[in-house]
Image 1 (cartoon, one colour):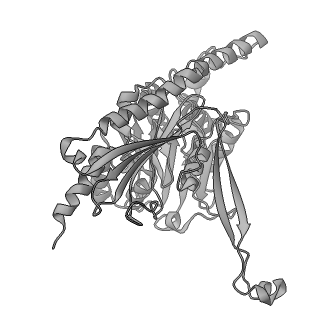
Image 2 (cartoon, helix red, strand yellow):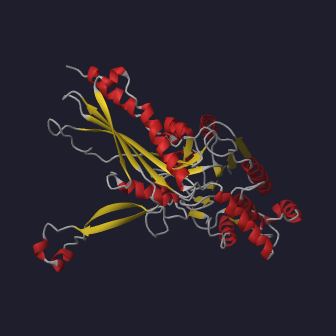
Image 3 (cartoon, rainbow, N blue to C red):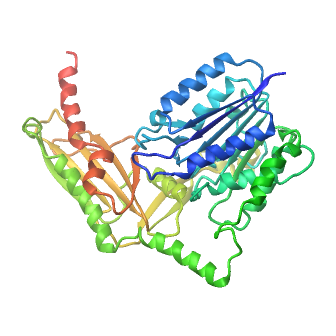
Length: 470
């Protein structure tokens, strides 16, 4: 019979995100819970450790172990979901390089597969953790997830578009997960029992809904004997209720609501302040693009400003970003227009096309609307060439204002000549680099750290001519 291994990862310190002091307690509490099951022969903690070290330790551990019954991975900290994957954020996490500064869920799966465990369990307490891996309403997972796993269970603290609530001492989801594991006092504690208890615990938590994925028989066991958890259960039941856990009187309920509203209100700028932030980021970027003498020999600079998003390319990506971020405001709204394509064999009639199994096809047009009234939400810097051999360089910034944050998308591209004095718009699908910022952030730092550098991009374009072979 093989052994069971647990890996517990927590991050409290961040360079570019807010610190989460409670995550160290999350790991400590989870360790006590797993120890009480008397199931895990190894429990390895990683608190505030570099991502490179965590990956190396997991690789080495996978090479040494043989015959693993259960592999249990727990993560608590910041999380980020983008169009490609979900990322567990470590201290130096950067949205511009998430794969090297964080642990993607895809990488985590690959590492877990190497243990060849009979049961693999992942518990993630982080924002945006519930990335949906199911392509349809059917129960089975995607082929990628099925491959290499005998049985698989995943608990995520919230859906892909939600935030996971931290706490003074312990994160909300981790606390409820532990309580769910201790709920049953006799017999076997199954992971399905834990899932059901968590569903009940969050029924009235509209802002946070746990997300579950399971591949197996619903017979996967968390603890073979619930009585092993008696001591830990008694410790939890003996703990005095905190003010937040105590039944709230109507007055206390309003006080809690007011405190929450005031925390949000502190993050909301005036319209003037929001406009100053947008203008500041653009002006700082433009300042970074001041032509050095060598670049000025080849290009002149021209700027444009738009108060709407009509000229933004690849709006589908932008709309997807807004949907993932969620939020309670409608500063920026979107819609999708669907127009049926003309069938190449339309003369056959609808019945004949249906008989051939040819479904209707549609062209989709994505629209973005600026409802908040802020100006210069899409701005650009044109590098106009002085030589016919050069194309035009276009650097652009898209600002997506939200109530408590501003999303910023940037992109550099080259526009080919279409005549002696004209250029074609970029013909490919633009890939936006994006980041999100509090309105109180320093525009100079935002421009320097997160906005694509148009001057460097233009220099590289000039240097490419010298690298060309004759």
